[in-house]
Length: 168
Image 1 (cartoon, rainbow, N blue to C red):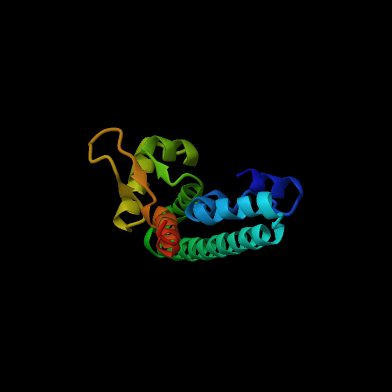
Image 2 (spheres, helix red, strand yellow):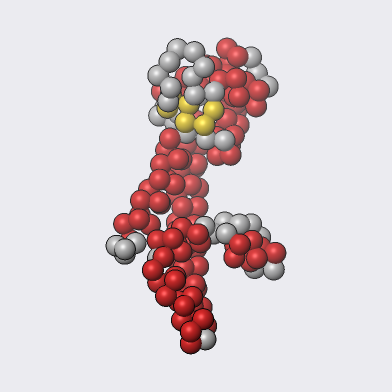
């Protein structure tokens, strides 16, 4: 994480988008071997190659995930426009909110949209019918909803990383 912050501080990255810690954790044995090689032999080149390979992998994952997010958002924008009629504008505002806050309750939607509870609840129900939101608590009160297709993109990215990782 410190490396990512250093890259941000030096204006190599504008935001801390690269999660290198996971790469280093997955490749822990090689990570320690490379550090020991620096200590014992001064082999900085091996460390830099290892580190840059990590930057490349993590960058490719970030790009792929970003593309999937963009495609999902466009797909859902089209679905909202074609399905919600007069509620489409509020629906698009809710979709934008879900990209920043993928787990919500009706009160949060009401507050964000500056609407009535009834209007927010109706919109949440419409999003459920469109398979954009999924109720996660199973209760009748204080229900929470997740923008599960969006969250699944991050889970599939993490699973792909684990599947590529060598066994240690």
